[in-house]
Length: 386
Length: 123
Image 1 (cartoon, each protein chain N blue to C red):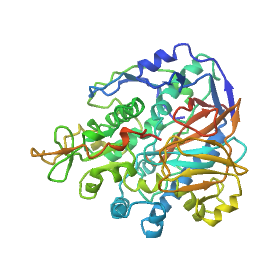
Image 2: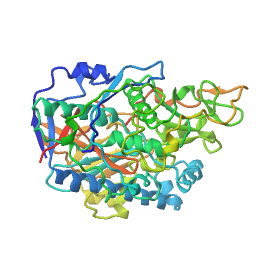
Image 3: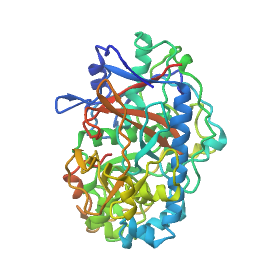
């Protein structure tokens, strides 16, 4: 694994605009950054990223199977009790998942380590599936990369494959916070992949979803919502007014309710307990677990529920060396052993390993000057060289 | 990694008034999805098919034979792709509207979306 500085394409901003990639710059700072790319060998991709991603996915599914049969676990994960049956029913019914992203620490010199699993509302999907592939095609033509460079990236095809299997002729509603440029862009791309799989679609803001007297969730035309992709976390839906009506509604959701178990950093100590010393896991404990002391005075403290690095603290030698403020942490925290992200040219990098339609299928690279990855962390493309 | 020899230009959000542009999709090698791989779509309890890597081909063939398509909106340009999931062709039929009758009586709204007005939803 290498970080290779390179020339950026002079016209990439025009291409971004032409493709609807409007959030390539955030607060006047680059989000999409092609002044360098990461190079991997095929062996690194296949053995160190792809295979562990499949294994982590299987381990997470085993955790769900165990959790729905164990109240203590559901309680430890801080899943509200009134939704236990709803979640268990979705698992037992076999509600399918479309996608997810494992965030990994990896430097090419040892096994990738799971930092967290974005199981419910992963973003950075358009730039992963489309824009970095476009970069590769042009980078080869313009001799930025070797002519035979490749990329670990079949995310786009897997999404279409997933929609085709899930849709089965049903109308798809896609919902989220449409005022958010990034969220709306992600929804637009996912909507496009669904349409390419043959699904008819409607996009709707979360706040516009209605509840009819019949108990159905409905769209703005009062048409019942049969199948809905939501870029909106389960824990938020559970806490909102309509959350009380989820179990009685006929709507099927993506990601499915059982992903509420996995979209939670409290799975990290549970995974470590289920699969101790697994090479792709870091020692992690609940904050109030006596065993957390085994980590000593250096650890990363993470809230059960948080997004974009919020409320995460890195403690080294008892001192907090980095932290990011935010609104999360009410449910509790976990302590994870420090796996300092690898640094290249002064940049910390984290890998996002995608799974869609049940298959590991792509990679996103995020860089930051801070070891905590945030929503402003830069996205760099990658290539397989050799 | 797995790409076809086509470049597809699709209009993003073709049905939405909030459409903000178009995606220029890159070329992709045609991969050969095995029936086993195709049928393993994210079923709970079924681990990801780690051994099934049907699309391992390099992208070396992706530079030739380019053509451009405009997505007309209602049907997929990918309907005839080689990696169309076997046995699910019904999914490519034009989607129908939900079959449950619409409700004309009072509908309440605003019961979702209150948290998201303050925080980012993505992760």
